[in-house]
Amino acid sequence: MTGFRNEFACFDAIGLAGQIRRKRVSASEVLEASIVSIDNLNPRLNAVICKFYAQARDQLSSLNPDSPLYGVPFLAKDLFAEIAGAPLHEGSEFLRGCYHSTQDSELVTRWREAGLVLVGKTNTPEFGMKPDCEPRIYGCSINPWAPDYTTGGSSGGSAAAVAARMVPMAHANDAGGSIRIPASCCGLFGLKPTRARNPLGPFYGDAGSGIVSEHAVTRSVRDSALLLDVTSHLGAGEPYYAPKPTSTFLSATERDPGPLRIGLVTETGGENAIHKDCIEACQKAAQYLTDLGHIVEDAKFTHDAVAYHKRCVHIFSGIANWAIKDWARRIDKRISESDFEPFTWFLYERGQKISSGDYLLIVQDMQRHTRDITRFFDQFDVMLTPTLMIPPPPLGYLNADKKTISQAAERMMSYTFFCFIANGAGLPSASLPLHWNEDDLPIGVLATGRAGSEELLFSLAAQIERAWPWATMAPRISAVL
Image (cartoon, rainbow, N blue to C red):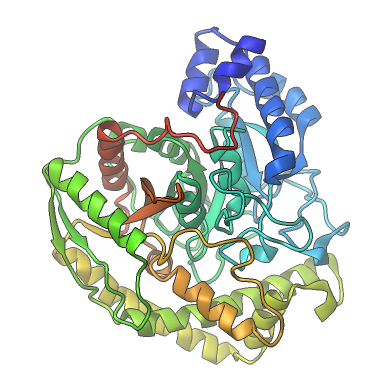
């Protein structure tokens, strides 16, 4: 057992499932190795905020040994994903001690059917409203690469746990970059699927007018692909429909995509400059892609990126307002400013000023911009941009009091400028860990495709991963010995 604890961090999820299937190690040994890693590393990283060790041990006997990911330890982000009997706080004091889930979310049911073993929940900012992971209720998650810097967010706890090798992959969701931002900051692969690819039921059908997507952060491309294969079938009553893939996503990772036309965008059209490290990451990616036989050309957006970006603030104001009112209704609790963090309350109050008609006008404008965004793919197969405008910033970068909250909101939206394009338009988009700067901070590069083109993105990402592997790189705080 001690020997396998040393080996555990070397395997991705598919690798672990293969070891169990070939009886080289038992599912119980894999689970215990993950528990040891969490217990050893979490005191330094604060990534896991709720542990299900006893339930996970009991769960092994109820899982199907023939399922594709049988015995693989997995962490759920404490946002949207409901696990029967477990508390759900979504990073907010408002829910502390008030709510335990009465049933599994549909996505959780599909994880169990795939054989995943749920060992805990991960940290997230309040209602996922910020691209960091520093909630008042649980405190900051720490980046395993650089403890003084952000993990990104809002799936920062999941990203820290996967980067540190506590588990090979973990749940993440994305309303404005919350899969891809922490993937970039923590040196991971993070794909936001096409709108409606994964379910939000039974508690929600839609979140934020279709901008929220569910999936995961992973070390390997193939893990992300297989997980999407097992979770993404269409459920009854879903408000949107994702185009059906022509094959499995996993099989897409096993073949090269053929020569592609890739448009590289490194200008925002606004006043904010992109940091040189993020430009360098894109230039490196462009060279990689050229070496693989793809055509990479400098390109410009086909939409008004600045005007589109301004709509994002209003959408998030509406989401914050909805989230608080939704929970107040579900738990029958009075709304009070003291229960919420300043940034969340700032967005809530902005949302209070938006009428129902105003909100529908914002959605109308977003949808109009989407038509302009998709014209980019009349010329190119893939849009390549920086994931973020700057390298991972220090902890506290987005902290603010009432006097400075507007400036913090501007920093937030500027920092994540490129990510929201895919959310508003419902497109698949993946952050690839292709660069580390002189400070050894990970810098992601964002590849975005047409709606329904996850197969193409998985194929392209896997092709790059085979040529320039990244999963062997480990941060300074990790289970790798």
